[in-house]
Length: 164
Image 1 (cartoon, rainbow, N blue to C red):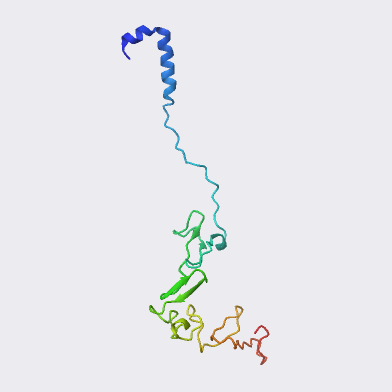
Image 2: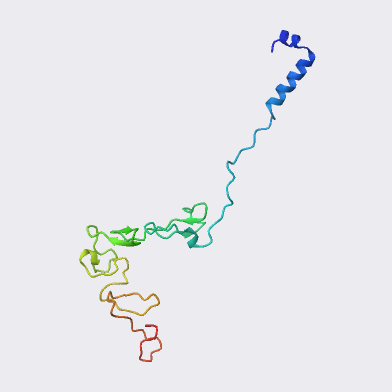
């Protein structure tokens, strides 16, 4: 400000003007960084079920906070559940063979039913016509014949186990 202007204001006005000007400038300390909107506390997953997005075609997600692909919740993406030569069908939650790509996606030598073969499950090399049928807890049909069942006899008494 010019000296003549200050002389015309008088001593009290200069002091008052200086106080207003200094108080308007704020502190000489740099402003603290604002982290933005306060976020909800971070909760890491504790089980794979915490990570399930409900979609079949992108595979089952897993709780793996140490995985470099994991998100902020500790969930890592799943792997494509379908084999090479198959595409996922989200509506039916299964993999379908693309016969023009490969008719035997699971590679055991039997073509998928949809490709004119007789393989009832072209996603599993353990299920195909002629395979040995076994009694298992999952009640799988290993030989693609729903009329047969395994003949497991763990106690070797000559009779098929009750579970079968």
